[in-house]
Length: 238
Image (cartoon, rainbow, N blue to C red):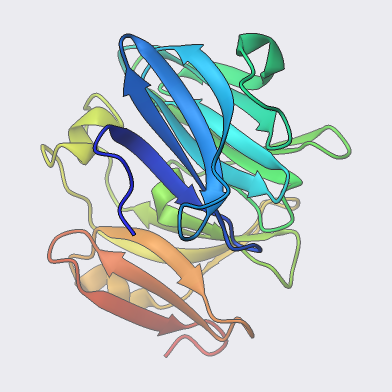
């Protein structure tokens, strides 16, 4: 099954056989939902072109996020998949910030937020259910993190050993800078953290696209340098 040629962003639901995608036509952007064969297609949003991306927050909610850049303010909106041919009035703004990028937890209650202020990276976690905010002492990117499903207060992140002055996240996306990372398990409520394997510091892993096995014995990641898949045992560090 092929999607239209003018698709700019697409995402699959983690819990249903459903996809969402965004197309651009004549200075407008349109968001569609469909089944995995692109059947039962429904247009849910009709917006001015603003270089958005789409992803699923949960079965009934879709993120509308501006593409992150150090040179512009970003916005995160939510919209309901049950709407039809809606406009910007159907968007619920969650947050905004310069260089904004985000990562949702599996329960869709918590959100890792990345911003850049005067070329400095700022990160925090917000619990949208109880309105708590946790400032993080780490400087890293949403692409380098994954929330635990089994332990709600834990997030696993690859953290660069050095962060030279650059325009983030743009220069990292474009390959103008690469990192040497180590992997950490972080309790964002207490601020405690531990390295999963100190041997990683001796390698040159620029880590991205983290995911966990169902029992959370391992964290898997892609090395951005060569696109190879790796895994690290969580429990004993081997």
